[in-house]
Image 1 (cartoon, rainbow, N blue to C red):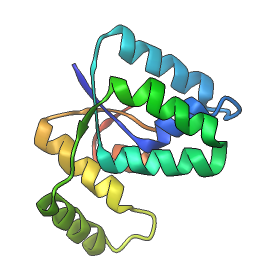
Image 2 (spheres, rainbow, N blue to C red; image 1 turned 120 degrees about the vertical axis):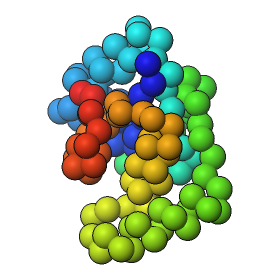
Image 3 (cartoon, helix red, strand yellow; image 1 turned 90 degrees about the horizontal axis):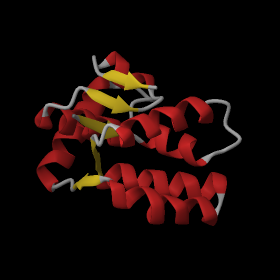
Length: 132
């Protein structure tokens, strides 16, 4: 079974002091135990890397790249997808809905992925099943 992996869960997984960390770590272990195909985009990886580096430091960024990214199947965003997601973001006219989220929704729908490893409520709003 496939699951999409979002920035919100990745950062929380690496932040041992976050109150949501235990639930996120348990969901991550469950996904790995199920041998789920873990899919994300290069935009999520870039965003997670930047957030980890800024908020948690270089050790977290290294852990992301060394321990987590190798387990992910990364879907690369092309110009067509980028433009389509930008249009959706601008049309939605919501300050809190990011380009990265809109790209993620598009990729999930295109690949038929219903489950997402995320704490971001936008995924639930879009009808996806969120873990944890």
